[in-house]
Amino acid sequence: MKTKRIGWREAVGELLEKLESCNEAKRDFAESKARTPAAYWNAMTNPHDMVWIAVRVGVDPKIIALFACSFARTCLCYAAEGEDCMRIAIETSERFLAGTATREELESARSAAESAAFAANVHMCDIIRQHLPEKLMVRLVRKLLQERT
Image 1 (cartoon, one colour):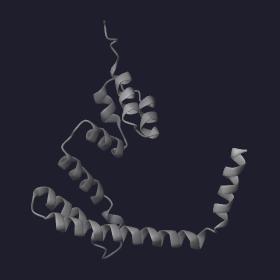
Image 2: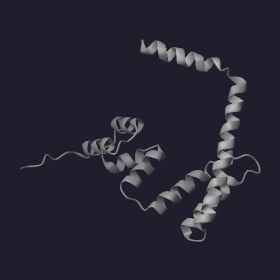
Image 3: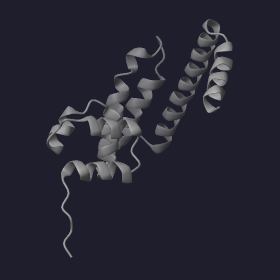
Image 4: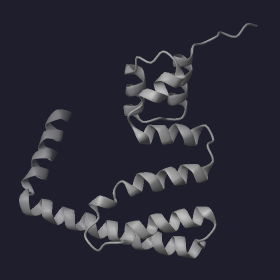
């Protein structure tokens, strides 16, 4: 029995479906004008999709973790003055990957950064509440209920 040969676009499309890729990634791929897999890779503009693909094709987890550290470093400019938790977590992660930090040090840095991020989220919600009334949520629920009828 002969197997039907499919093109790379069909193969990637099927793979995105099989691996339950997000709708945005599927749409971006479908709208891509790339003629080769390499051209598609070089035209990608979403780093999350690129890392997702790298993970799915078996790139060494240490390399993926180093990518994550690099991405995280780009966010350090948004940290509050004197807030070092994110930087320390990144540096500790890099040291752990290099074999010079313990798992306990890594967990401690992660926990501190997670706590700082949670506090920042709570603070952001408080700021939003100061400027936007709870009536917005009521309006959203009404709109959703109207759409269902």
